[in-house]
Image (cartoon, rainbow, N blue to C red; front, side, top):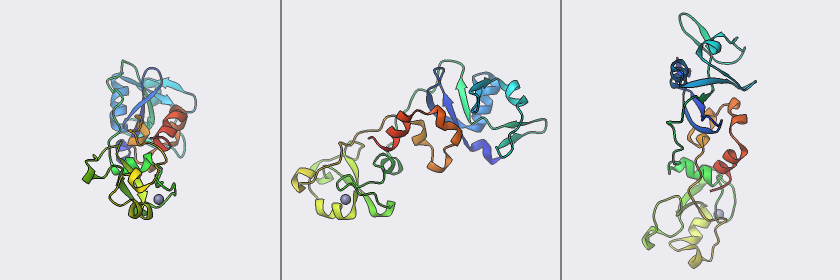
Length: 198
Ligand SMILES: [Zn+2]
């Protein structure tokens, strides 16, 4: 069943989104009592039995076993103190593009992925590292203009100081795999932090 590898949003006991896991692991946690399945429409928390008794919703994915068919738990609530502390956002090309919103950090223009490159603010030849704090997106024109210089030397200004984005469980999940049912459980702060701030 392919949907077992799809993502489920994990909330801690304070209903704060802390992580994502797979549907497979979510079902196992609900079965063991380590988590409850959340019904997104009502915010109701279900144990395994009451979840399995819920009527399937037409058009929504379901899990089928020999004995039963049940709704896919898309959001779960941990019942014990979390063993899933917030992690750090991995420093990856994909996440850097998301942090900078596909926008050149010098001229502010939004570009297609292939028209942007990763610029070392302090060039590597000047000792600049490859990190959240020293890498930004730059369009080809700005990249050529800046060349092997610092922004000050090139008389260019960054839109904002690059920093490591705050943890966001949604940043970990590929854009297309984010579920609509998660929206209400992930605050604006999380959404904006992932895309607007850095
Ligand atoms: Zn530019």
